[in-house]
Image (cartoon, rainbow, N blue to C red; front, side, top):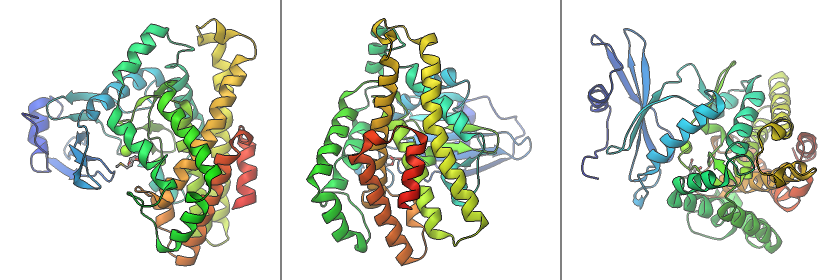
Length: 401
Ligand code: SR1
Ligand code: MG
């Protein structure tokens, strides 16, 4: 860590100017720390003269949300840069352009997305994004199918697996998503009204834990595709025209279902949140309809686009056997439902919550929403083979919410 130091709003401008010829000489700088994630420092630097701006993201050697008592591999910044470059190529720009990575400061400089909004915050303002389902399904198909070994040469793919071994970040997911929420204690964090409910519905339901254990070992052992690894709505920038995926520092070779399931879960949680916060009326009806069709479209478009692309891109001889592609994509969707359930549960009782549920102002409605979220999630985990098409989700939403 010789030359590493933590950047601040006072030092980051001169740091960037020394490293990168981006801003004009007469620039008038405005700089803010805008990171609100759990792990990193994120700065936006803008020249108010030319309006040129960039984002600087620096990995900290510990979990920002927990402090220095929870150390964390700083090398994740290099993994993030590497995957962003691969995904930029694969998706024709559905991720930001990286300008530079400094492997002494573990600092990445990238394209600013100031005319976008983090999707979670946009959804919490009841905004709709008409092109999102088309674009994110493209992202999923291209980043997942094209990095899998039904498409890539098997030796090249194994080299890729090696380059994306990410044990500390994977361990966070193994613990926070697949283990702690189904046990008492550790870093779990829940409101008082959930304590008994958590024990009865999650800890004491052994049949549920068996299914979660299956999903956990799939996460650890199924090096299927190069994952983003944390594809919730806080990792996606959107506007009316475009989608850009950010923050792939949890990237590794794992099951496709992990990315698809995280996304599904976060759309459902915004649905449950909207239903709890808003009284009946047009805003509520329009937003719920948008969420339900966006979710349904993501699932169906992922399936359709994968099946359509398959014959053009698949290279493995056995993967071309009639009937295999339908089995393969169906299996991904079954496990996506299971992952969605795990993600929903951990966001209610685990270490890292989502604003969608925590910001429901009325206590009784928040309690009802969080309990509904847990029961909905259990259904997705236990009966995941029943959720393989968009309509399966829209029917379940109608039944539960
Ligand atoms: C200690 S990190 C907690 C969570 O934040 C990240 O965004 C991941 O979702 C992780 O599980
Ligand atoms: Mg993140």
